[in-house]
Image (tube, rainbow, N blue to C red; front, top):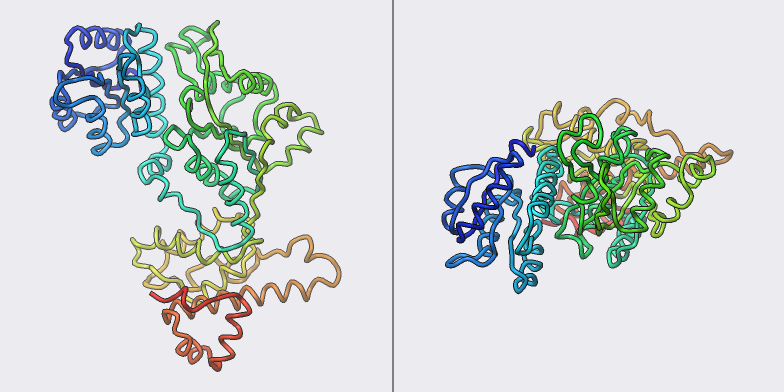
Length: 463
């Protein structure tokens, strides 16, 4: 992105603008300049910029006021503030308001370019990952966790307690249980919430590129290193670095990562200088890391370093009471285009009785498929895939395979069906128990008894 990046320089001192523009254009960036905040806003209306570099102290509209206007118009534009030492406290406060970083006067070319590269790297990551960009725009509200189960509630409670410190967190759970969403929730509740959350998918980074990807490299460090590159550690500086699929981390790189965590600094490939970084480490895996250590595929020291706060996410089959809420959430997001906004009682019952080997991710895919093929306004049983309708994938867990466990399995399945049926009825009749009892062919008292058995309250379904 760097060669094509457009940068706007804003300062009321012509000499400062000229020197900054000279450094940037020598590095290959496209630049425009403005002598005031008002002039900068006019240019921002006419052209697109990836980064704005602005002095803090300017007449009429300060750099902080300009920052506020920029973030209101386009939250994705990165802003780098230039400040004198007396205004450092204000610059730090501005970072909390959305500025990416600040640079103090007088600065040298190297300092400027390091911060510019870091800001543009962060911007490029957002553009390459549309989902990440959407989450940044929606903020904390866009990442609300949806659950009713005590099991998942305990996970969230532990996560929010862990957010009060900077201790490393290791999130364990099957694929599709929402480990990255939980890592984001931890970041949002921490003191680092205003800084970057940077995910690293350890399963997709080639083993030989891990060091360059995480620590960065200097121009000419190896064949193909045509320019300096800022690593993800520096991109995440001040924020959270999330290692997804940690079990895929290459064994030869693990000692280097351990040293970086211990020393809180990294050395870019091809450089002799250490760069200090402050990141909160959160990692996730669906593997048994202790077994990986025992088998010699994961370094014990790194495991202990990351396994400070351990959070185990239960699979969806162990918290079936969350299925309905999640399904309704996905339906509200995915069904609008197809005119589908409700679940039939039969469809809800089928979703509740399914085993969900693919967990929440599979549930979302099922709802998306049903919305694409359904006719609306109600998502019906026949809109669901055959395996969900028939329960073919509702494979009993290990405990159900034991002798004498058939009755336990049967009881659980019936309970799930009853729960889904009751919730579907109550939603349909807006919590009116009398109307629900009439449709169910039951007496009002019998229906209320069944609701008490499942802990369902009619008031929760009244509009």
